[in-house]
Length: 118
Image: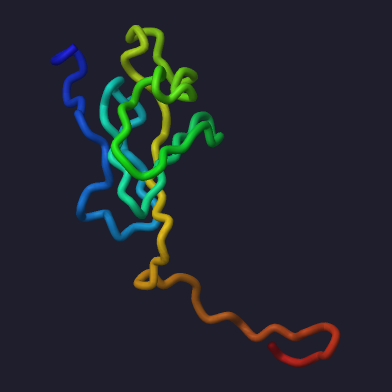
């Protein structure tokens, strides 16, 4: 249905300028049927629906279609004849991120048994 969904994409992937992130949330909650999800070798695609994990995709190129990925059937939008899936899609890095720092200085904590500062 070209033209039916303006701005629809053929491929979904993490943009090049976001590849260093641990998690990237795809900004659109409406994913067109037969769009290709391109999952990098160091990523996992995670589908969430109403706050619950519903399915994952391993690295590779995947056609977004409920016949190939049965868990997508719960996302199908009946108003579009099943041509759109409504879900949150996250790309999660599964490699070691040595460049990303997190946390901060931990305050001194006293061990209640030994009374030593740890």
